[in-house]
Length: 353
Image (tube, rainbow, N blue to C red):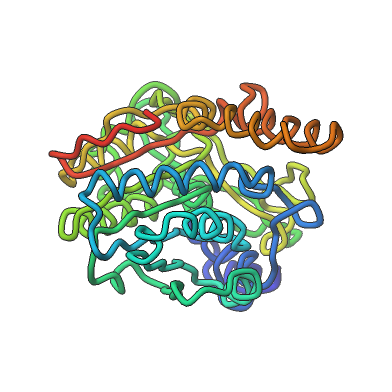
């Protein structure tokens, strides 16, 4: 916490997005830069850790998309923020069953954390894999961008609207040296950007995913240049509504994001309606945004679970379906997580949607 306190002593206050960026991604202090937060012993569990059927279904989707593209001799898969490497490991296991696809495949893992990169390298040993730190490093295609809980962990700005006035959420120190939120008058350029993005609507808390929109623009450029698509899984809403979705998790419990910066995860919900608009502006098409449950069921995850469970003991069968419920049930991940696929304007691939 000292790093943030020292910055606040010097600067008096910093915008929320700057605070999140330091808390999560500062080279020495950031949450993702110094530990592996995934799994039961960590702070949260993601879909690939719930069931390897998740990765298997996405692998089938990738192979099908490659076939739809005409089985190009080279296909690049870029996983955005690959976490502990579990999803990539599951993908590779299935990819190897499709020889022609696997022979055409290269994988880039976009990872800025050296700590997580080391974790991934221990889990995935495959000559197909290369690590990158920037989207700019991608120089051929077609390219499939794949993100699972990537965009929700990127810094956002929060702006409050009060009558005709706009205030930006900042972080500062109180007199007793505790970190607190304050509101500062938003600058004119920021207000203009919010208006341009049609973010000023009902509700008094506007969330501006500044970093995510930059990534979407960079990804769109690569897809337009080399062909391919973006498949992303994240929790969020399809209906555009302005509200505070900032949250922090540590040891599977929700925490105050100001209490332990650098020690806990900080996320916000994805505004899929806004993402859709940004992708359209960048000449990509999003046919439909569906729930994770609908997407996985359309790919045949229940049928696959039935096949696997017919060959195992009752205990193992119970485990398979218990994990499947977590992925699919509307009270678990099934409806909370949405799936979005963006492709070039003339693309007609609809599997899962």
